[in-house]
Length: 294
Figure 1 (cartoon, rainbow, N blue to C red):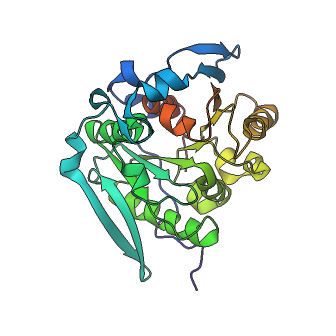
Figure 2 (figure 1 turned 120 degrees about the vertical axis):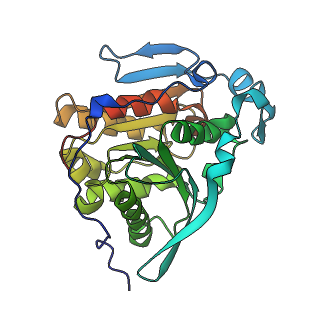
C-alpha cells in the first residue's frame, strides 16, 4: 500500500527573487477579461462580464468543440509529450510541455475534474483555446506545463500528484509551482494545501469552479501565505458560487491582507472559469506574492 505522505522531495530552499520574473504578454488582447462590472475597493474581488454569445459562440468556430484559429498557436507541439514517470513502482501518466531543468522558472499543473483525463488539460481547441494559451505561456517563458491523470480525488490521487510535483522539483529546484484544479479536482488542491510536505512545494493554488473545504483556512499552505485564486460562474449548477465566495471571505477575515482573489463570471456556468481565466494576469499576481520560505 502506498504511504501517502512520503514524497521524493520534502523541503526546498527559496532561492530566486520573486519580483525578478514575470510572464511576458501572449495574446493578451484576446484573453484578458472583457469587462469588469464591479470590484472590491482593494481589487481582490472582481465581477467579470461574461456573455454566452460573445465569449463562447463567437469565440468558437464550433461551440465548445473548436476555437477560432486566431486564439491558438501550435508552437508548443514540438515539445509536447504524452509521457509518464515511475515512482515506487507506480506509473504516473501526464502530458508535458517544455523541459524541466535548473533554468526552469515556473511549472504549472492543471488537475481535471470528474470524468476528465490528462488530455482535457492539453486540448488546444476546447475551453476557448485557454489551455493552448497556458501551454504557450509556459513554453515562451522558460516554464513547464503538466496535465496529469490521477487515480482518484482522495489520498491515492494526492500521493500521485505530490510525487509528480516532487519529481519535477528535483529537476527544476528553483521553479515556482502553481496548481490549478478544475471542478472536483479542487478536492486534490485542498489535500495538497493541507499536507505540510506538498504545501511546501507549491507557490499558488487556483480553484476553478470548485467545491468548498473550510479546512483550507487553517491549512499548511495558508500558514505559508501561498496565494490563492477562486474563479466561479454565477450560474454554476454543480457547485454554487456562494460556497467558495464564503471561503474567500473566511480567508480574508482570519488572515489580514492575505493574498487571495475571487473572480465571479456573471451568468457563467460550471466550465466558464476554465474558459475565461486570465492565466497571465493571475500567475503574474501570484509570482509577485510568492512565499519567501518553504
